[in-house]
Length: 139
Ligand code: ZN
Image 1 (cartoon, protein in one colour):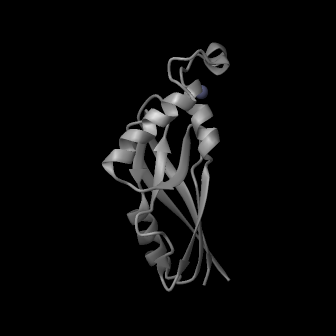
Image 2: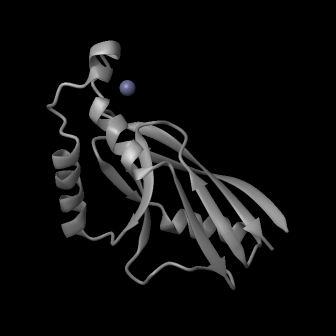
């Protein structure tokens, strides 16, 4: 078994920005020369998350609205009272989504659904430069 460690750099606008990183993930998998295995993705930081969605305009509008209902921006958070950085809602949203995702690949192809893209969700209250850690395990 081989392990290949790679990085995917992403600029985000923050505020629930969702970025489709499927092309970069496929590209890094291709460069690794590996054909079969799993890709483990992890975003360091506690205000972003990784998941999959159908990356289309309707859902890109629905998703921030759903997070607004779950962890509203205008609520008072203990985190903000302690630290004053105003991103308590971002930490809660990131904790619910989680920082990691595993995607299997076979014959050099990610085993995603036809309408399923890998997305980075950045919940922080400002633009961020994210570096997603990617490890390919396989052959
Ligand atoms: Zn914070």
